[in-house]
Length: 255
Image (cartoon, rainbow, N blue to C red; front, side, top):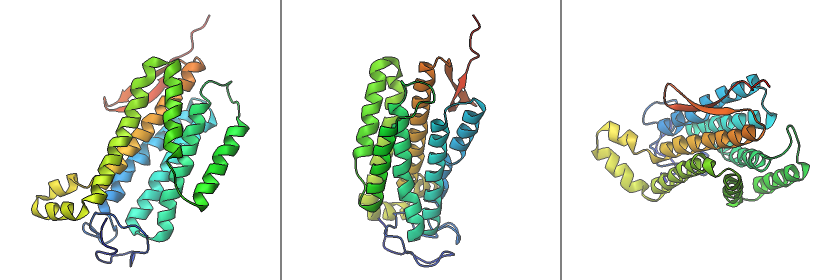
């Protein structure tokens, strides 16, 4: 990680307990970590459109909540990296836990009746969120997500590609996040010697945002596809502009 403070900008002294490897206020006086901030757009814009489309398609509210939860994570991370203030750090970290709980709930409820509510699972996830909020973070969320993917792909083996692609992308982002932390000083020296484009390309914490944002988005699609397939909605994966995946639904066949 970076030193406690590189330089001061619009938001004043750093008060967060973390200050990442990107140099502070290097691009603009108004944003502490520019690339770590703008890379959160992938967690803000696509999920908003996903939530709107889910409302239009009349999907269960849990999937609207999944998209919006990812948006909140992106907005919290944006505020944190833009300001490096402790209050914004909490806005960045806590929504990650809450959104993962929403994802886990959706995965475990894929094969239930439409609009059913599992109050026991809700209680467990809410309790877990409260404990983590007041005490510490844990790997339990990762374990639960991995287990839920295993359960779903055991029932629908051909869905493994989408499920494990989302997990693989997430883990690649986690690897880059660790490289950015462990080799921060070396990376900073390397960036100073290289052209600006190389410096941008080696902002691995920004890549962590991009890859985990994409992985989380794909996880929502994976869960939504599994659920709507079970409900016989006839989902199809389409690619906007040949790049960005979305789920659309074919009209139901009339008998």
